[in-house]
Every structure is written in structure tokens, then in C-alpha cells.
Length: 114
Image (cartoon, rainbow, N blue to C red; front, side, top):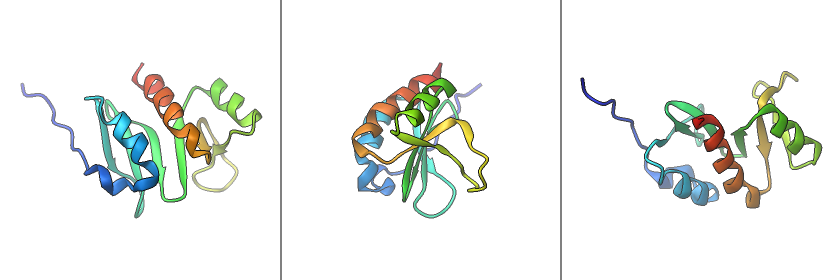
């Protein structure tokens, strides 16, 4: 049996805004950067599971529901509504403050990896 090889996408393709997040998280051997849905969108995955979405206009992280509730209550982010129809995803948060992205990406990595 051979080990499954995971595809890696060139890091600069994710754009300069996300470069610190991509550089830090792809140092982990189990993290991959892959194309997302639509032009300019990328996802970070661990063990085949998405933990961060890097979109042209937003940073989205998967965190425990209680943590998402806390961040939303503090005004740090908003719940992710991918279809823009009011049906939010309980474990996903959209954060605009670039200073928080790396910290939250690391937190999302630990959450999804566990």
C-alpha cells in the first residue's frame, strides 16, 4: 500500500493579503493549500478537511460553535453565511481584522486536526 500524496498549490497564488497565514500554516506537513470555489479563492486543509477559507474579500475560519459565538458577541467577526440567505454555519466565522487572521487560523488548525 502506498501513502496518499496530497496536492500542494503554489503559495503566492493565494495573494499577498493571506501570505503570512499561508506561509505559517503550510509549514505543517499535514496542511495543504488548494483552490477553492471561484476565482481567487483558496482553502487550507488538514487531513483533507477545510479549516480556513481564503477568499478575495474575506477570511473564514472553522472553530468550535462556542468560540464562534464568543467572537461574534465581541464584534470580532460575523457568522459565515455562504449562500447569503440567512442560514449561517454554526462553526464558521468571517473575520475582517487582518491582525487576527494568523491567530485564528492556528486555532482553526488545532480544532479541525483534533
